[in-house]
Image 1: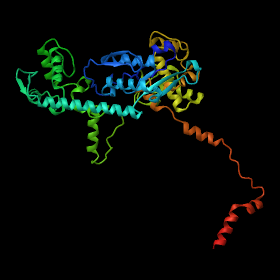
Image 2 (image 1 turned 135 degrees about the horizontal axis):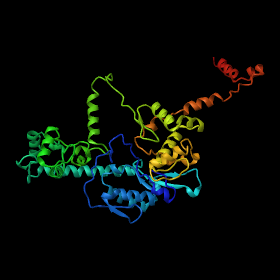
Image 3 (image 1 turned 90 degrees about the horizontal axis):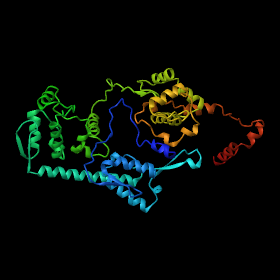
Amino acid sequence: MAACNGSKDRQDSILEPLCFPEQPVDDSGAPSLQRPSAELLVCLFCSESVPLKQKDVLLKHLLLQHKLVIADVKLIADLPKYMLYWKGRFLEQPVTDFCSVIKTNSTGPVEKQEDYFLLCDVLPEDRILREKLQQKRLEVVLEQQQKERDDSSFRRLCMFCSEEFSGNRSSLLNHMAREHSFSIGLPDNIVYCDEFLDTLQSKLDNLQCLYCEKTFRDKTTLKDHMRKKAHRRINANNHEYDCFYIINYLELGKTWEEVQSEDDRELADDEDDDWSDWQAHPVSAVCLFCDHQSETMDQIYTHMKETHDFDLHKLRIELNLRFYQQVKLVNFIRRQIHQSRCYGCQEKFDSRADVLRHIMAESHVMKLPEMSTWDQPQYYFPTYENDALLCTLSDNDENDEANHGEDIPVIAEDVSNLKELKQTSVLNQLLKNRGSCS
């Protein structure tokens, strides 16, 4: 969640962590299981409402107008019912009874401080609600699947030949897999089968390959392409298909790949643990000022120092930054550059390229504003959710404490009168008591 100080900052609000482009852009790590619906999403505080497809508009409204953020929206099974539930609860009790409060600019003037509210499943009531909505959705999906199994009125032509199939849908799916080497999975794993087939047929009618999704000039060229390239399959990375597979509804927030990998791990538990062929996946960190990436942290620090004259280690030492202060500083710089604003002088520019030219030309690379500007709670939140730089910041808190401990003087006991000390020692009394007992 971005810091919003005044109307100008509100326009720059970042609703969710961004993502560096070294990985495929994906709007959702979770399956896209929202069914087409005419339901409206209602604001939790006012009369504002939008269609379900425009949920981002309402989420932005909640942030800018009511300073509320709902965590993990994509994992909520039935967002309209979720919103209605909390709208009713907020009418009964204050929002602070349910939400975590995050204060921005906490060390600044009181008039510039703002409270933001986070509604998440840390609250037991919210967690229970999400689980109930998930369970209800699973029940609806299983009921729909059973209806499709029992439906004998199904009738459809094969997408690749003129043969017609009727009765159970599995006969068509098995035919396409057997005769045309086109398999979309076992029939028992599929739900909303008619809509699934309609989606695939529509792509073929538009002369689009089902796997690479390229468009061709005619049907003959498309068929030759799919046959020669072995593209008679669907693209597993296309989340448009997620809602057609039962496995995606089983566990809250988990994709079929995650569920399957857990099953594989359980099978592997019985095998000998052999890590001899294991190779670590290289970490790819991105420069604060350009798109340069390095697989080691030493390389990225060297690049920033030599190319941009930015020395993060030097700043850490000079400002005596602890680990979480370094996290805030990196997130602050990332966010300012993303918003085309110089972090040193706060001047706003039209583009990212313009602000970077200004930073270099004006030697603002190592110029930081007052610590109170960036040492704020909102900068705990990453600007880029896959920012590997955050995971490798130097954590010397323990070493610092050890060094401070060396400077603490140790004062010895006063043993100037040793004879008196022996006579008044508590050990004498203990020895007398022990002698009397024996």
